[in-house]
Length: 247
Ligand code: 13P
Image (cartoon, rainbow, N blue to C red):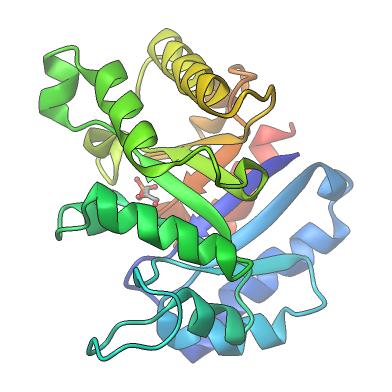
């Protein structure tokens, strides 16, 4: 199974559902539709409307983050996994670099993953090195650390998707070379294998994915799909990624 996940970040108002409608009608008619899933993570304000609207359709809705407590608390503006699940989301991102840079620690991320899973949300756990880590050849150890500090053996890894997003690639148009990326994805799978004693994991790539470069990513068989930012805000660009992937 492949995944095409669109992360809208701070984008969208109710009428932006038009974008998803176009993606949904493409997906529902696509001859390859059984080979992949489409998930969109809109901002919190749109989760309920979108999840209701797409309830019996091809697209699934996820959240971009969740709070580190399970249900209710006195933290202003916090939204828990329980609340996200209650409005129809099936997934949540955890650990996006935008949130790590705003202060999400490994301990917080561990709680987020734990409570999201407990509330039957599937987790898309984001990891990635920054420019300095890459320059200092620390990528592998940074990724290993990000995984082992957050994902605990007792977590149900079947409900966790790992998204590798090098920070230096997000929104920059810069992407890793094929051989570099292939080695990194294999490394991530190795780390997961050691931790969970299992064979198959879902590991996605994210960072400046578009309709032109997706063919290169396709050649790396270990990549199970994509976490797409900028290009997910346009139905045409998002559909082009899927079309070119299966061309
Ligand atoms: P871009 O596709 O805009 O580089 O964003 C990637 C991302 O951060 C998705 O979560």
